[in-house]
Image (cartoon, rainbow over all chains, first blue to last red; front, side, top):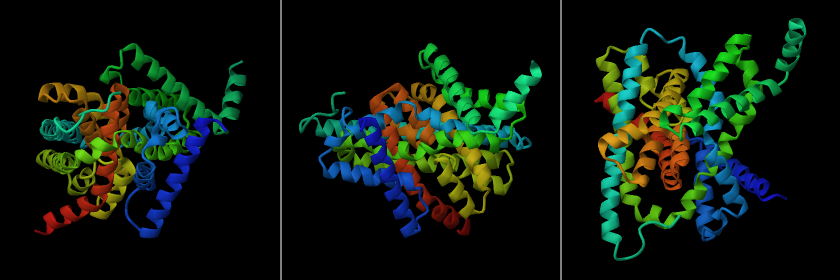
Length: 133
Length: 241
């Protein structure tokens, strides 16, 4: 079995596990997000060695990450066809979406950057800051 | 001759193959333009591919339901792709654990900013209350945003439009905002893209830098988790108070 196919199989198995948790708990979260958490826990338990890009899971996840944009095209088309019908409040909504997105990007980026840099300085004696790519 | 082409189109459009082929061809063209621009944020492949597909559907008068019969095979892969965002996090697990504090604080600050500023700007410009409620979850991935809007008394379909528009906007304006605000750290840029622009922002982050992609995936997943629990509670508490 090709490594990529084996990796995709694992991803779908974990998605199923995530959907099962959502179904059993009734939590209002998407199954794939829960599956992501379950996979992270499983990878951590096994010391992270399955995440290597040469291993099946690593190869499959990297393949999806590279062209994640493609997967949003079908939903994007549906949304664009729908968006054409809400024109009366269009300008106000465009301003609200653009303004709030810029603010959220700036606030999240600045807060995270300031705190991460402080943590880096605190930990810089203890060990490496970034894993080499 | 044109009659034969027309009959061929009628035959092809009756199978899911046409919708699938259209999606892949549109994306290939959009990706080519994106790559030629040096991966410039304004040339983001999502809006370009979407525009090409919308134009093709309009020209052939194909309904969305027919298109989606083929496109659903691409759409379906979103599930395993989101699960796979755990893999880059596992590679950097020591740093994810070490930075748990910054992650929690930036998540709450960014999430609150996104929801509150969207509602405030729209309210100031006279947008109706039902639309305001649909704006609250706009920085969360579309399926979660629809669920949140429904529980708040907003419109799920409208919430999906706002979420996708926000994702595209964030991916397009991200670099300009980071440069203006002085956000230079790749981890912070990625985190902000995943938080404010969910999956489409995460896709952009991976195209820029592996580190940015890792942190975008984390912020995207955590935002979906906490928003689905916290946003409805916070909004109900604010309206009641």
